[in-house]
Figure 1 (cartoon, one colour):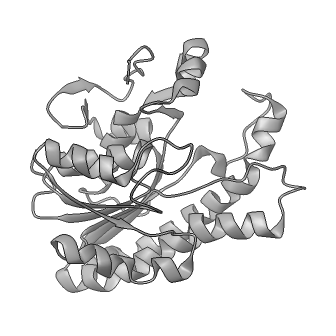
Figure 2 (cartoon, helix red, strand yellow):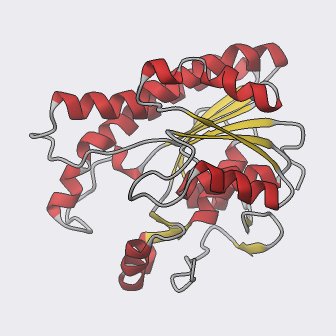
Figure 3 (tube, helix red, strand yellow):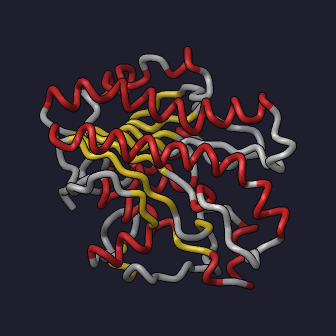
Length: 283
């Protein structure tokens, strides 16, 4: 549990879900983790806060700090990497997880809808990468991980879910497809400078704390859901190893490198790439 010892990580969208899980997993491997979301405290109907993420890491003996910023606002995200560095030092690992969707049919997504999603889901990760890159190159290396989505590819027919569900995700998926392409180009530009950029997507819906609706899906279709630990372990692989320009799914990557899935605190081996979600867990 030392693969990130001495490293500083910045994880966006870390107040809950995949972002929180990745932050916990990096911290368990020794990283000093700075977590980001649009605010420190409660976020309306959404469960989880940055304060809770920091508290969990500190309670497990890790190092963590929080920096709030609305990444959909270019002015708010300007200088975020420098602000994060004030806590523990320059950022070695950047995980761009923050994203949002406006679910509308492609024929109905407005300019405002598209602009919002491209600003948060594409421009923000690129801006933060560009903020972090000079320091990474100067120090001789680093890792940039952009969290993508299976929605970057149009589902094949017959649709697993409804036709509408397959279509309303399209405008969001287009932002992730753009992020995939940009990341690959960035990765090839940076590989000879020991900065490794990659995209990771869950192969299925991710089961996280409080996601009761996901549990309902999993009870009917277990193969449509994956444990959050699978994404966190795959993220750790891409934040520590020498992968260049991968656009890869969580289970596929873990199977490819024969990596065991561990608990978020790193203490227990839970299984392999085919680990099933614990649908009846109480959290």
